[in-house]
Each structure stands twice: as C-alpha cells, then as structure tokens.
Image 1 (tube, rainbow, N blue to C red):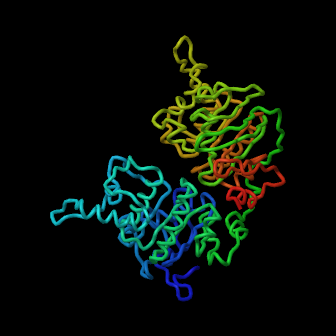
Image 2 (cartoon, helix red, strand yellow):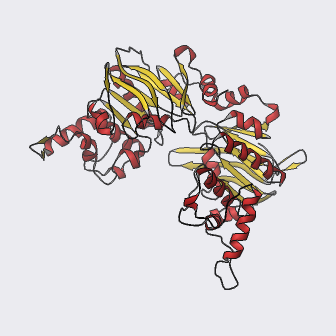
Image 3 (spheres, rainbow, N blue to C red):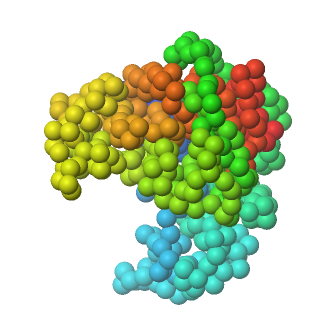
Length: 502
C-alpha cells in the first residue's frame, strides 16, 4: 500500500485504501492515490476503471465506504463538496456548467462571491479578483462581459478561472483537452506549468498518452476499481502503461460464436460532419457484429447518431442492400431498416413514465393500428413477444419503465427497436450501467441476433466486450477511423495503441 510520503516528498492530499460500493457494483476496492505539491499525477485507466468515482470522492460528492482521506498528513472527511473546496480541492471538468446571461466575473464567483460588511455582493471586489485570476492564467477577457458573447475557447478559460477562484492547493483536470483545438491545448500546457510553479498538486486524467508523457511527473493506474501500479512517469514506458490498463483474459466470459457473415447489407463511404467526424467508410454484412472502439471524444456516438438521422452529414453516401438511400431523420433510418439503441437510455431511449408495452410499440404503431385506432390486443402481443425474447423481468407489461432496473430498461429499448424488424441495429454502449447478469443476457441476445442474420454495430468503451463480441473492430480517434482490425489483430494493446495514437 502506498504511504503518504515517498523519500522527502509529502503528499498534500492522499487517499488510503478507499473502497466505494454501489448496489451490485464495487466501484473502488482498497485504492490509494497520492498528490504532491508542484507535481502532476496522471490517473490512467480505461472507461469503468473507477477514475470518475475517485474524482467525486476527492470533491466531496461521494463518501467512501472504507479507507481514509489525508490532507497534509492529517485524516479528514469531505462530507460535502464545500468541505473539499475549503481544503483547497477544485476540479476542472470536461463540461463545466456556466451561465450565458451572467457576466464573466459572476460565473467565476457564483456561489462564493465576496461580500460587503452588509452582506451584499461586493461587485467591485469581485470584478477585481476575477481580473487577477484571468490575468494569472493568461486570459485577456473582460470580467464584466456577458458569457454569451465569448467564444468556446474563452468560455473554457472562464471555467478554469472558476475552478481556481478558490484558494486551490489541489487542481483536478478531468479530460481537460477533449474539446480544445491544438493551439488551446498548448495554452493549457502552459497553464499547467504555471500551476506547478505555484506549488499546486495536479491530478490529470486523460486517455491521451502524448499528453500524459508530456506533462505528468507521476502516474497511477486503475483497472476494474483496483490500484494496479503507480510511480514516476520517467520509470515507465507506454507499453507498460497499456499492459497495466488492460491486462486481463477475456476469452471465457462471452458467448461462443461461429461467425457466418452473409452479403453486404450496409456500405458507408466518405461520411463526414463539419465538426464531429470525417471520411468514415466501412461495410457491414448480414450476421456480423462490427465493434466500434475509441476513447472519449473519438466521435463514435456522434457518427452513429448521424447515421440514424439525428444530425445531418456534410457529405458521404449510405447504401442499404446495394441501394443508395437518403437518411435525413430517424424516421428515414427506421424505414430503411436502421435502428439505434442510444447510450443514454433514460433521456434518449425510453419514456420512463410510460409502461413497458407502450415503450416497446411506440415506433411500430402503424402495424398495430386499424383505420387510425390502436388495437390494444395487438399492442400487448407485440410487446410480449419481444420482451419475452429478451427475458425481461417485470411484474407486468403495465409496469412503468422508470421502475425497472438499468438492465431491464436496456432490454425495453432493444425490444422497441427489434419490433420494427430492422436490417441493422446499432447498440451504443449496450451494457453501460447494467449488472453482470443483464450484461450476459444482452451479450447472448446479440449473438442470437447475429446468428439469425441481423447485422449488428456495437459501440463500446469496454475492451473485454469489444474483443469478446466483435467479428471485426473499427477504432476511431479524433473523429476519424484510425484502424480496422480483424481477428488476428484483436488484442487489448493493439486497440489502445490505435485509439491513443501511440
């Protein structure tokens, strides 16, 4: 177990043997993490490794179920986010909530503005302090300007200034470069060096190995909620980090399949969007499971949503069964046999306040209507047929979807689209947030769908799932296809190297 001191170094903030349990999931198991003044510690791990849970514990959003937090060697507890802020812990998130109708200074000091002797907000002091913070990070921004009048890069600097508006000793940067241009990333690197010079401890979370090796002094690797290794970045290679991130056997935990792909059913060529993805091209055959892998910001979900007609491409063609089709809306996609099961089932996939049977039949109302009237018996039969195929567990089909477990909600969404009798089904993170038993059921059903000749596209950030379920894998990086891998090349290290640009 790592101690709070290494040599002459003393950690300004240390987590020791932290455990965090959610219903059915042990998110963290006896992990330790140490952050040192004037040093950047990179927290590395694939999606689901426990990084976000650690950030929420460090910022007082979650309370650990075991272990201790030490600040300058003294045990403490961050019972609420304000307690973490009072100890100088601040976070710069990938997406920070800001308010367009407020001024820059008001956004920076929202919730902790300086006050006058009468308890009123001291506008003059707030503006002056905001100006000092902005100049300190090299931002030439007027504190009195409305946020709505700023560009994206300037808004990001305001978000950083907001995080630094407390007397920060520990700065957490969670995927800070995901939405930045190359020039803005270079400016962020300069800011990191400035914060190091001020003696601040920095926790840097990134999937990009070039960033990690450029600015980090130390590393900590998590895998499946456990601490795998830590040390000086100078003492580790990219290959060793990759091995620590993904080192596990996935050969025995997925259904055995004998792929038997048929004719090409989907062909995409030159598919591009002005800001999200560029020049995507591939073929998909009947009975095939095609995996899409990539890191945060790779553009996978954005591409899938465009293929389903949610957003429009700037150019590119789509052929279904050899015939070129125009998809300008989800209705066009469904009519042409393409359906999409989104990652966020609560907001995009299901209507939680409606019962199961109405969710399942929603896209198929034309088939179960006669002369403009719904046939209730047909509606129940359609819902029953497809929920039984997925082994959905519920008291009745009248149960509201919001009362189901995450795994059963996912089954409702899949059943809804299967009821349209598609040719291609896109599954975006199909097992995200579901328990192990439901994961296995979804995997089994995916294998059955492929065996029946349905073409499956699976977007997943879980390397074991990608390797265990895919016949081929397309790796995306920064909105483009970085590699297309077949059976002989499907190795964890290969996926990570292509995704991270190593």
